[in-house]
Length: 444
Ligand SMILES: C[S@@+](CC[C@H](N)C(=O)[O-])C[C@H]1O[C@@H](n2cnc3c(N)ncnc32)[C@H](O)[C@@H]1O
Image (tube, rainbow, N blue to C red; front, side):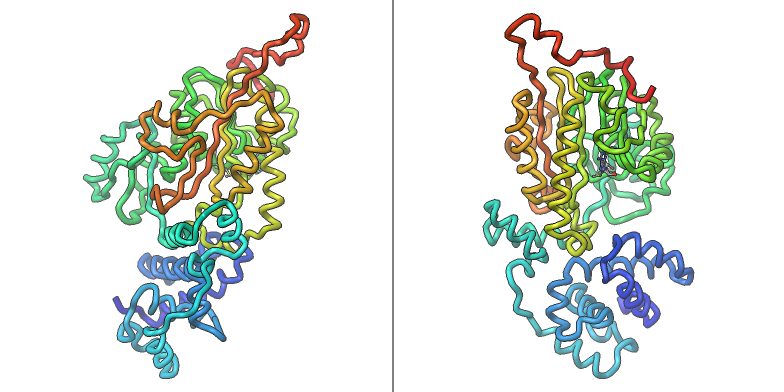
């Protein structure tokens, strides 16, 4: 479809705002859209698609537009080389010189390094290669992150059944197929505005990547249990855990961000759950947490991370993360895990998860934790998923990526606390008390 001069100008202006990558691209773009009242839905879609295409293929497009990778030239190169528009479709937009250059682009293939072909920063490619990824694997992983992500829903099982939601959506022209792995998931064809659908406002489903849903299945919280979602954010996973507990027991949603917890409130209201207790904490050392030590059945640590597994949705993270920012995150991740682990009673289960593909945020954190905590053992994720009838075997630790699993890049390890029996009976009282889950509260 041809693109109009106004649409093209909008793309270039939006790119100018987004490309410095000093703030999240989706935040910058949303703010920019708020000021562009004259743009209709089709224009906005085109602008967003083109901006994100440039971010996803920035190394390739930058090489093509040397020595002058301006927002305008990046936009032209993206439309011609990534989207495949022909020059007729750009008629009336380009100057004669730009038309000539765009014509030459058609037959140009720039020389790229392996990391550039994978569209990954050098330091990320190096970490992955050091962890054993071959050139072909690195390339395939990087390329799978260059597509846009599908739209997945998680059906709220306390309000609806997956089959019924799919049928109702189909009646409204939305194609929703069961996700291949998660028993609660639906994958939507295209990008319809599902958050305006009555089933969404009634709380029958939430938007959630299938990979996220698998983390809940690993934790497998049960009715009546005491559960902590340590890094609950806006509650994507909290709501799933609450539904898995059939709205019974107690589910604490901790986070240090007041704003994110505030975003949980309307979602919680829609969900119909009555077992969720959001708690703002000052950090992993907060006294509210200490009061729960040794009393909790299950803890989810969805740790703050680089987000490098979500490059399909947030391609700007490649330019906003660095070895230094990841090193800082590693310190926080290890500290959160160590503090969260103290909450568990004997036999309790903890899932540590990230949406990162970097070994330093994943295996390195778990290996160091296990070496320092002999009272924890690791449970095999593949066996736990098989128990939940999920056909997926990535070994002892869960490792998801868009190339092999069609969902975002996720990592998870499952730990169980096994406090050794005291050798001398008088030592028994030194153990942390098992506590009565439902009656203990961190805040009161
Ligand atoms: C990956 S996000 C969580 C996403 C959320 N679980 C969801 O499913 O929507 C990580 C969260 O950790 C929170 N966080 C950062 N430092 C923390 C800390 N010391 N203790 C608890 N939460 C923390 C951040 O505010 C952020 O909301």
